[in-house]
Image (cartoon, rainbow, N blue to C red; front, side, top):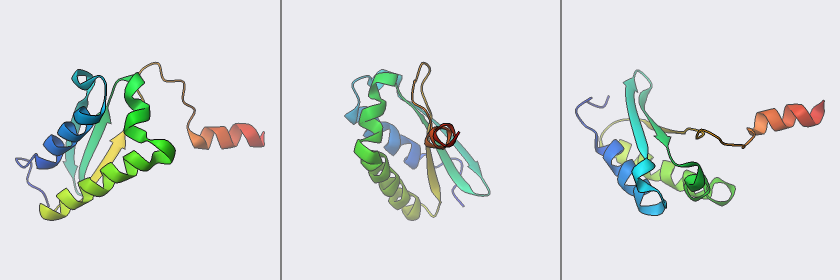
Length: 102
């Protein structure tokens, strides 16, 4: 399991995301370690969500793939959670499906 002192994954994610967004000062990465591995929670400016997620989630998928590689190098399982920013009007897919079937 990853050492709590090894924050390479967190630093990598911050560097990567700050490089692609328009509001790098708003990027916040929280890191938690438990029995499941490392969980990185990413918060960005509402206006930057599209850049982080990408078309059909392609950018988010690529970021997760890179984090998996960083994790393997450090003998850790790294997961990414992209948190919805305050004021977001995005409706999660599960809720859309429920509303459409009603």
